[in-house]
Length: 352
Image (cartoon, rainbow, N blue to C red; front, top):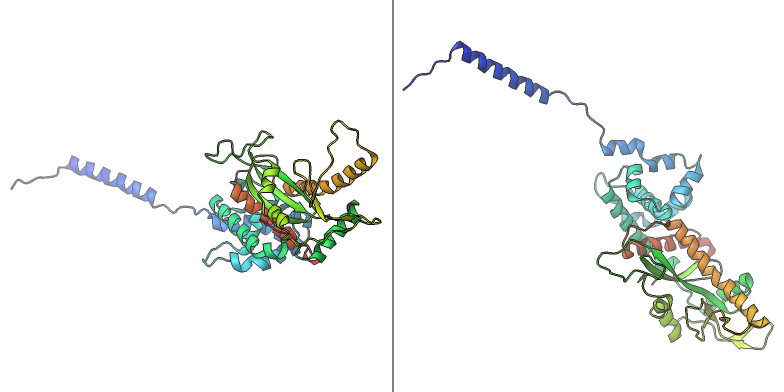
C-alpha cells in the first residue's frame, strides 16, 4: 500500500482552510437581533386597539372609521359573536373581525390599507369580510329586513307617506340603482350599463322614513330597471296579491275609492298598484296633473335619497374590486345592520 506524507506547506494550507471555514461558521451562528413579529406588533400598533382606547375621549374617530358608535358596535357584536368566534389559539377576536368588516363596508377602504392599519394579512381580511357579512345577513335579515305582513302595518306606511310627503295611499317608493364594479371575468358586456361603466343593479323599496323594506341585489348592469323589477319577487308577490295590502278605500276628504300603491319613475309600467309621473308629451299639463306629478315625484325621491345615503356610506366613485356576489353581501349587511341599530323605532324590511 502506498503511503502519503503531509509536508509542512500542506499543513499550512489545511490550517488556512480550516480557519476560513471556522470564520464562516462563526458568522452564521452569531446571535441575531430578533425583530418583532407581525403578531407582536399588532398588540401595540393596531389601529383597532387605538380607536377603542380613545373611543370615550375621541368618539368621532370611532364613528368615522366604523360608522357606528361604541354602544352600537357592541350591540351588533352581541348578536353575531357566537357565529364568528374562532377556536384556534391565536384566532382573530370577534371584536377585531367586526371592526375590520365595518372599516371596509363603511369607508370603502382598500383591503391593502386595512391590512397596513390592522397588521392582519390581506387574505385574512378577505375571509373576515365574507364571514361577518354572511353571519349578519343570516342572523338579522328575518328580524330587521322584512316586508310588512299585515294590513295594519301597510296602513302605517301609507299614513307616513300621507303625513310626510302629502301622498295618501302610497305604501312604498321603488327604484333601481347601478352600483359600479370591476368588470367580472369572461362577462363580456353583460355588466356594461347605459351609463358606460360596468355595474350591478340594486332594486329596492323604501318607506316614507327612508327605511328599506325590500331589496334585490346582483342583477347584471346591462338589464334595465323595468326588466329587473318585472323578474323580482316583489313584483310577483304584488301581482299575485300575496302582500296583504289594504283593500281600496276612500281618499282623504273625498268619496273616491282608490287602491293602495307603490310609486316609481317613468321606467316602470303602470299597474293598478303602481303609480308614476305623467309624461308631459306634446300636451300642456293641467293644474291637477302638475299637482299629481309633484306629489308622485316627491314620494319617489325618497328611494333616490336612500340610495344616495347607502352608496355614499359604502362605496366611493372608484370601481369596486369585488365580484357582484361579494358586493351583494356588503350591501345587505348594511341594510340588516342599519335595521338592527335603531330597532327601538320598529324598522322593518325584506331582502330577496
